[in-house]
Amino acid sequence: MKHELIEKAAAIIMEKAGRKVDEHCAVTTIDENGYPVSSTMSISKADGVRWLTFASCLDSDRVRRIKKCNRACICLNSAGYHISLVGTIEILTDPQAKRDAWHDESGSDDPKFCALRFTTERYNLYFSENDEGDAGVLSKE
Image 1 (cartoon, rainbow, N blue to C red):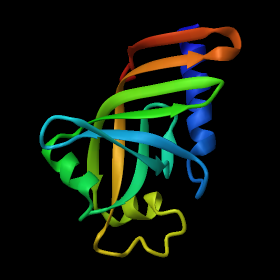
Image 2: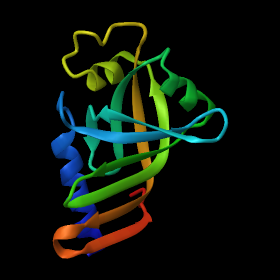
Image 3: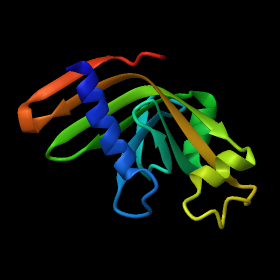
Image 4: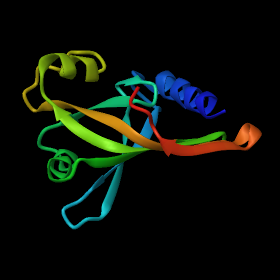
């Protein structure tokens, strides 16, 4: 059962990855005072629930927060599901990571642009169609 729910969550994330509009998730980071701050972002690329990447700017408040504390939470939800992933997020500036994160590659060479890579450590999943849920630590297999 646990594996089936993780696979279901992975399929939803993969469906949303790479879309330019109307497909957002909440990304929560920790500010300099220890408070959570959420913003909506589009998923650029993903490997199911294991990792997700996002496009951002090096001079953004979000990146400043990540530099001070790399703990983060990603949340996707609808009437049919709730997917909450907890883990760490890193700032990537290498050219390939930037190309992968930028939707059309036209702005990926901008020196102010960066990719954010979130790696899941634990999760909380709920699917309403059959009232199934699971929480746990994601295996690093």
